[in-house]
Length: 272
Ligand SMILES: NC(=O)c1ccc[n+]([C@@H]2O[C@H](COP(=O)([O-])OP(=O)(O)OC[C@H]3O[C@@H](n4cnc5c(N)ncnc54)[C@H](OP(=O)(O)O)[C@@H]3O)[C@@H](O)[C@H]2O)c1
Image 1 (cartoon, helix red, strand yellow):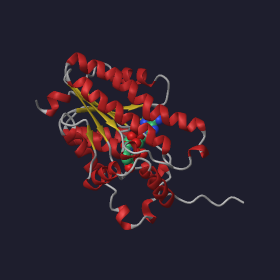
Image 2: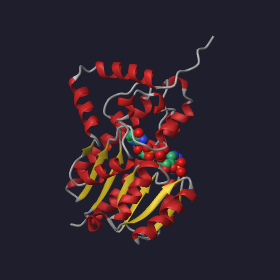
Image 3: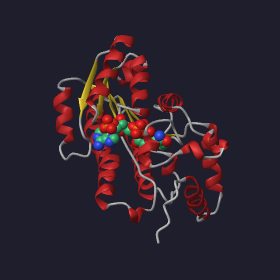
């Protein structure tokens, strides 16, 4: 079945105002599927929606919504009206590096709402519709940080493991209903994410910087894997890294990652 018939007529993409989500919107629209774009920054969504409608002749919809709000689903459904969603890209997410106990609990709870509660609610709502249709697709944005526990990024890493598990579990569960689910696990990817996460790759050694992938390559790998795999790790270097971490003794990976993260992150000013 053609991509458009399997996953059309509309795709709902969260976090489409920047980075990986905006790139999902571009590549999905290029495949002839209408796109509903969700994020908080309305002007950005509208500009992208206009571009995509012009370039690809698809219909577009910009939905300004805060996915941490209690009733965000009602706002999205009201904006969608009768538009039929055959592809859900659960992409919106953020993270902040540093010591877990130095972060405000309220910020961690917001992170949990954005990275876990929102994709859960959306997957449940649109998954039910897709199951009735006996077709459709769901892409869950996990991360390589969700494949191994990541000290100094511990809560983010846990939320991404959660997305990965939900996606991989649903892959098997919904396959019999004709619905494709994939967990996409990118490594470092060019986007606004680094800014929010307090990460500055400009001072990293060149081999480390060279592992940063483009959002274009990440999204291409994710769309290629949909309907084929339960998990996609874009980029050869990241696939090797994952294999190596599986071979290392259980406690070694977090130990090594802790050292690497403390080296890579901006240093805290020394306290007196
Ligand atoms: N970049 C990486 O290295 C990397 C690696 C692995 C996985 N990922 C995952 O990829 C996904 C996309 O991240 P990205 O790298 O593209 O980051 P990004 O450039 O910072 O984009 C994040 C998107 O999420 C939206 N968003 C943030 N808070 C929101 C809220 N409360 N309500 C609605 N939308 C919200 C942002 O839009 P507004 O600010 O306009 O709301 C933006 O569109 C995330 O799930 C991230 O965990 C990223």
